[in-house]
Image (cartoon, rainbow, N blue to C red):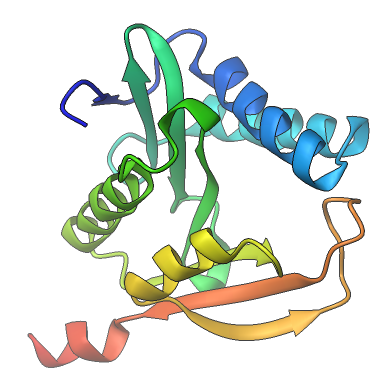
Length: 170
């Protein structure tokens, strides 16, 4: 995996991240235009307001091609804490350990910045991602029939809360 370089935002990484999502979610889950436009709108809004001190837009590149991405939206996460978003590993990099590496880097960033409470929404059936979330301290907080992605899926909310640990360390 040494041939995969991690970086922040680069020109083209926003479009590339959307393409990685669509390559997977259209083929595997039948997601279409409604999902893609929601993704583009929300990611564009995030990149436009991103604060490099608190937010993270982490990309993974191999030979000039985007092969993965993950985002930590701390400034827009709201009362629930920092929002882990848009985690994707492209087909070309699956099975290389890149997903774990992206999660590791993001958790280190969050811990260094004091983001002790984090959350994410996903949906039932994404088992490899769920295993990574749970390995990194996220717990399933709720599950519902809400389907913000318009793909006929069951939404899940995961939370990682280390507030008590952080409070006892001071």
